[in-house]
Length: 230
Image (cartoon, rainbow, N blue to C red; front, side, top):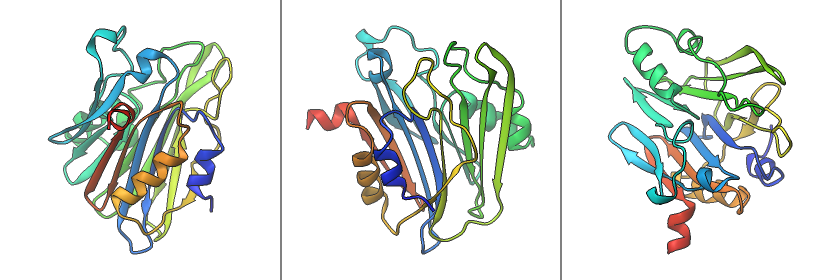
């Protein structure tokens, strides 16, 4: 398995990332982070909502284009938890509420229309029984082309093990999309605050924007702008 903290510290720009798994004790663990290069993308914070979190502008006067960057990354669906890097969170919530599956709901969506990067849509679902699913929807060609849809199901959470997926694999022009299967990572026995602090420290200080962590229902949010203001 991979040390997630070392993995992230070696990659200055994975973009957005999702980790789902279980601590050695069996407690569920979920993490989601966003990074940014442009002022518009960096001008964001995570804010708690009744059913999860949302992104919002830190300084409304500096927001130039809310499309693709303002959304609900985390929402509860019944007793499950959906986490994504875009408004497909709402697609999953709305369609799963009427009985559609995780995969069927995401087949209604495609990668982001932000050529030439064609940012992948990454999504995760933590079920009440601690099983979980991950998905990535990405462009099949440099021109966009057909959408390639990948789905990964983990029927049983293994104590101490999680899986990580991100939008990018680093810098480039265009940005290189994540490739291969989700990375199997070690999940330490940490509370939400400790796990959040260690993940935040592993993310590139120049590019990190916001981080959400949930360990067995305990939630922590870290925002760069709020940390800087302390």
